[in-house]
Each structure stands twice: as structure tokens, then as C-alpha cells.
Length: 174
Image (cartoon, rainbow, N blue to C red; front, side, top):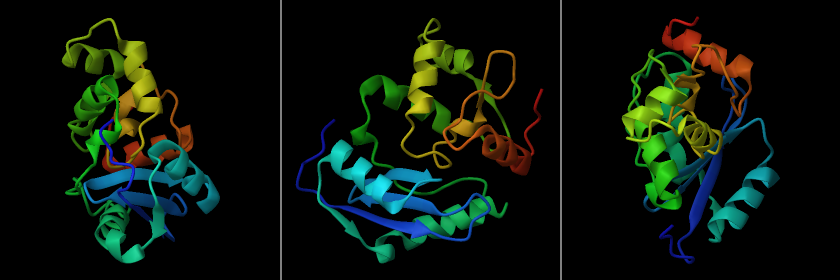
């Protein structure tokens, strides 16, 4: 990770979405975190512990992010045009999540397919771990990743939310 410890992280919440209140955070380089089903204190703890940077609540810096998340969850946005701060991820996680980021709206992939795609065909479990620690779900669409049998597997936001997101996108599920 190449983050300077002095760069400020800005955060805000997106209220009234179909999946509840969403917390978002960004650096000067781009988006660093998206969480829901958690409290403000949980987000602050994560940001200060993980990023070791000053944290400041500033909704004005995240208006564009909030608008894109609302549009997506309302079915009106198929692709995000947000900057992502990839520097916070370890190399393997970045590699796996870049492949995940490329999965088109309404389509799915499996952990094994992603492992093969990044040139590590025996690393499906490691890809699963990278997905499980995805700091920016929705924007990096880990909900589009399924088990080898094409069935829903773990999702930090819960399997009901994963299923809802995939149905909203029109993905075909086994």
C-alpha cells in the first residue's frame, strides 16, 4: 500500500436506498470504502484503523458518488464512472478486484473463472477471499461472482441483497 499517512479521508452517508443507509468514503485519489448495514462508528473505526489517515465528514465531496449509487440502485445506471483509489489494496486483491470490476452489468462469473482470467487457475479460494474483503462493493461488483456451481455464495451485504442486486440487473441465476 502506498498511502501517505497524512492524506485525509472524507466520508458521508447515502440515505433512503433500497438496501438501507450506505456509508461512502474517498481520498483525493478516489473512492476507498462503501459499507451498509453498519453504523457510522463502525465505518470510522475501519477507516482510522485500516487507512491510518485523518477522517473528516464532508458530504459535498461525495455528492457525485451518492448520486451514482442512487441511480444504480434505482435501476438507472449500468456502469459507474467513479475514480477508485486502488492503492489501498494488496497486489493480489487488486488483481482479482480489477477482474471483478470488469464483469459487465447483468452478467456473472465464478471465483474459478476469475482466477483463470488473472492467470492463477488454482487460486479460486484466494479470489474468494479478495472478494470477501472488497472495500467497495456495488462499485466493484463482487455480487456478480458466484460459486463454481453457479449458485449464490457469501456476500458481506447478505445473500438476500446479493440476489436482489442480481435480479435488478437481470442476471440469470441457476
